[in-house]
Image (cartoon, rainbow, N blue to C red):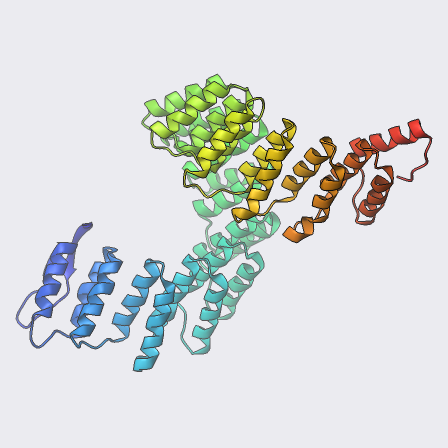
Length: 517
């Protein structure tokens, strides 16, 4: 049973008695059992106080069962008890039951309150049902209920989380039009959304607006902006914001430092990233697993796998356990160096340490094995299928590519057909690989049938697919079909790549045919 961090006041009062106190759920349930044995029964108000305290201890399912129990005893609900129930269902991820309680309220003639709507809106946002949350918000205001600032911020957070940038900005303006001045939370939420969608100038405009209104940006605001600038390669602007932070006496935190380390690593300036880590320590901020994983990944991608292993050893000595991201980066490093035995040892170590490999780890090792050890790749793929992981298109595409390159086109075809059996659809890359593989095996007609069927899976050919198919026709002496497909490709706004153009030029030179490119 969970314990609360501090004793909580038991708010059940009796005549001539002081408030009871309890500090764990067992104590609270013991008191509940005493209450239901009383005659006459305590009012719903007294039960609400007790069960509301249990809600604060996050025992939501217990609260639901106890309300059902008091209903059977004939104790009538009020708006507060029903709001508590709605909150419990929302916290348990059963927003549908929350709406059932709302329906029950209306049926019993219990008037919903602003808290009722706010709780449901929060529940919808937590399940990423943002459109429904906005509809509920509109219904709430239409009925004359005044949303609290927290509700506005909740909807804003939901809109931002799902990338609805335009709606988030409009909602921010709606707040203002209804007399609510957006606070630092509202502004930071929308700024974060703008940055994640690459709308950096708009984010900077909001920052300026905040300052004009006297709202001081905090570490969260700056971290969002710096992260956005670093991701878009605007290091100069990121540095300006960093200096602005320091000028405003806002100390950098682990998120800021990790953003900088990541940006420097992506730039290829690993030595500067290491210097930033040293600066962190001097400022009393210890690198975390994110910091170390970023450094491990960067070193591995630069071929410095031995140094990456040293970093892993160092983090373990400092009491920080590598996670799946750290190990996957190290696995990738060994695969890039074609050190498959070492990659597999790290993979097996993950399992020993109960750090389950994820889809990325499996895909990385499978890809490594495809370069000369195709049977091992298939074995690992089969192990992944029974691991309980939800497979996506990536490992299938990697393995199909491996078998095509190894000349095992029948196995590749079998894997391709397995996709639909497993509820997956091939993407444009999977199609390109299969079309290319079929053409290389002298099966251009089958390849073209596959090319023509792409639309059946809502996947339209791109420039790569057209070029691969045209080259397949040319290599198999289907000159007329290649020319027709070239015309179709150009008509759709695509152009021949250097390899396709070279094949056509060779055809013109050696056959003296005139083909309009």
